Image (cartoon, rainbow, N blue to C red):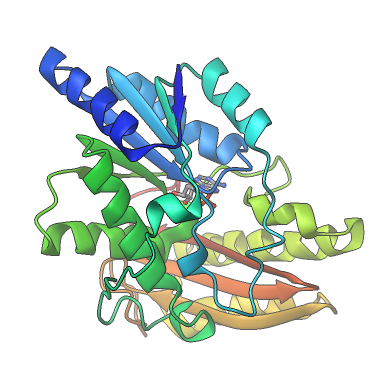
Length: 286
Ligand code: AMP
């Protein structure tokens, strides 16, 4: 496995693979790797001859009041996990490498940036769109793998790649959960035992809404109400939003026809947690 922080070295590795005609896959991450990340890496490993993982805590997707400095950084363990998972290339640049002084360029994806998490995280999705575009320019993989856990991010990156004619296929992967339902997240490390208990109300609420949907409930507000009712039981939970949205446009829907997503963001202590489930009339599963 090659490990590099240098753009040219990463480019060389990908060029060599292209000459060999191998299919390539990229899994962009901010490190602090857990089973959620590893599920993306395994999927890439199954589908691609060459697998690259990027590890970069991207400062431009953190607002000034957010947790950029505190974000967990576990580089050695991450590199070991990548090696065990059969990764070919780890690209772990530093901030100065990715953003040269005088950098003037950034991306904005209209509409999709402005709903759900958008109003609560100023500039976040501009930072996400920009860094993913930069990573795909450095490692122009055939496929790039993203988690449905960050559903708005997945939809926005698909749109950005379509709009900018990026050749990479964006592959969405199901949310990996702890056995008790909590969606895995690097930010779960911030939770105390008591806060973690409260955090279980998020997935419990989402699953209850999904059950109601399967039983025939199609009213968007009623489905949101089921999640809110669960969240209310948690004294320390501050709800940012609970929204039942169209799976492609992310617009709030009052009636769910065949498919939608119900998305949640809450604050518990100093952690901000997000989660979502698919509502799909054609069958179960996320
Ligand atoms: P992050 O390191 O948080 O930027 O996440 C890197 C990638 O892993 C993103 O595509 C996330 O959506 C994905 N990811 C994070 N947590 C999970 C999870 N619990 N299940 C599936 N994918 C995840």
